[in-house]
Length: 457
Image (cartoon, rainbow, N blue to C red; front, side, top):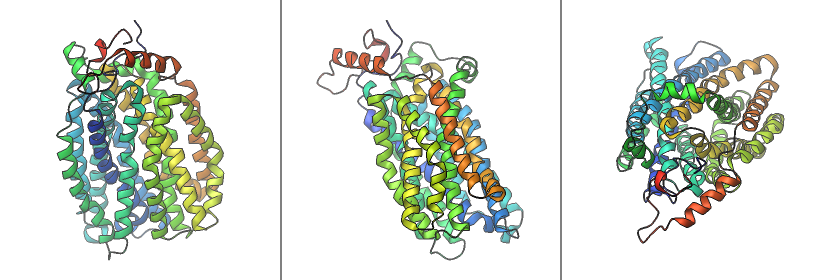
């Protein structure tokens, strides 16, 4: 008996695998719409709405610092969500995090500005941002594990890629709304996108309420394997993989913070593109990113998680300086091409690979805790990256952000080299054998629990 494919769920997936992936993805769309929408608003509006009376650079720094507060709260959300996900189940975490995120985001649209209530305005913005961070931190682990543990062994990359594709969908929706609202008068330009999010939350709750619990978690409960303190156990037993996961994530999420979040502000303040042009470029990149994320994730099912990560991170190191040279031309076609490449390759490929790779690094009894910790701790670096990048620009110009992007890619490359492959030739061969030995029967995919799916578990 081998543990190579231990606790990965039914060999051919559960009958609900596709529905679960889509349901989890819908939640990811909403959470990203809410969370990324804040980043867009921080880059374009919040500097003057909540931090007036300062230079444009100081206002941008203050807005980006508020953006970073939400990222700093994400590890706490990840700890809480991971603990509950391993103790009470993946599904309750999904529903609770969605409600919390939806209410916090709607509240942003109602916040008074500095001109209306003075210093209370930025304080309220920070409080709501912290709540957003807690909710988003709890969201990812539950969504990705639900999809992973329902999915067929041979298509876990593809099915988790569907969940990860929810992020570019959310990015697309957020920027489409901002692209339209930019023409609204005054504060309505940024209020409307946040107020409109409540409609997405209602739809998401209806869909998520029908998603069944993970078969792997049900199995953990049935066998009495639920651990008392999953977070503590994960830190004690999995700390090496958690550190590697943090490195892997930094290349993706902190790289995104430079190439997209900061780039929005850079293009605006340096007058390289108008707000409408910048938002249009983001919409095009996000639209292409939906298919790119699923495509990259599916590729990891065929060649493994590690090769994709190593190749893309190596490209990121090389692309760092050309990325800024291209946008500095002020030519919209080149700016558009740069943003598309930065997003569909440097971000989407890494996110696509993470969906299956992160859960496979951890035992099922503490999988939510380990994966969430690795995924969310890196957010602290990512959240303050636009702030750091702005300081670097003030110090040495565009070369500072470019070098930082390359440095993040190098961290990811190093982490990928040091992280074990979880879906190599051996695992793919064993999965093929297991699938051929299990008869899916007349009612669809095999639903046999993973510990009973033959000797390959």
